[in-house]
Image 1 (cartoon, rainbow, N blue to C red):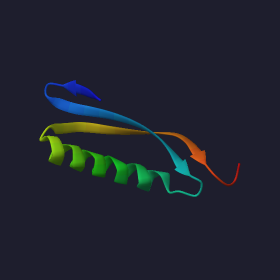
Image 2 (image 1 turned 120 degrees about the vertical axis):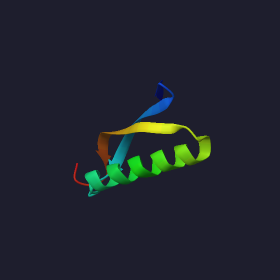
Image 3 (image 1 turned 180 degrees about the vertical axis):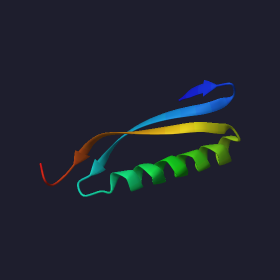
Length: 60
């Protein structure tokens, strides 16, 4: 988490399950994290970066 002029920039690193729709999951995570952080802290979230570090499960 970094701050820039009172706004938060959040970097997340996740591993998703095999067969997961990665773009859909990443978008949902970004929206939910932004909403929750803003609601709880009252701080503005400028951006949430979701970095997919790998895929876990079948197909390997």
